[in-house]
Length: 94
Image (cartoon, rainbow, N blue to C red; front, side, top):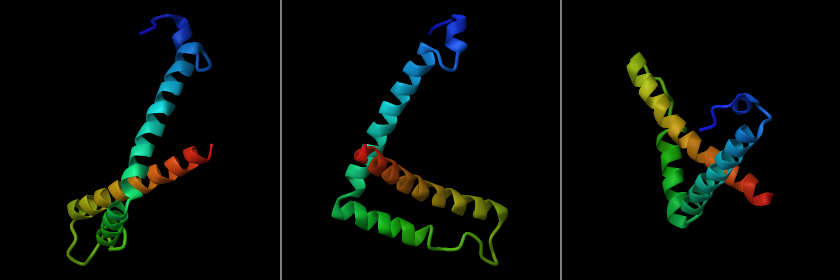
């Protein structure tokens, strides 16, 4: 770790190096999601996950605040998959 004042510079070499490393890791992760969910089985699973999460209401008359939070957490996981696939698609075009 760089303990110099330069490491605090948002346009400095230490930050740019960390950004490049993070972008590379982001591309790698998104690529793995794309590889997984581009298969027939992956598409089937993603459709199923969508049907049992995003396509269902978060709240119903018997929902508690805790239950609603759990449901929204499930939705967030499926949204994250879609975000990774979109990111992989964008990175693939570049």
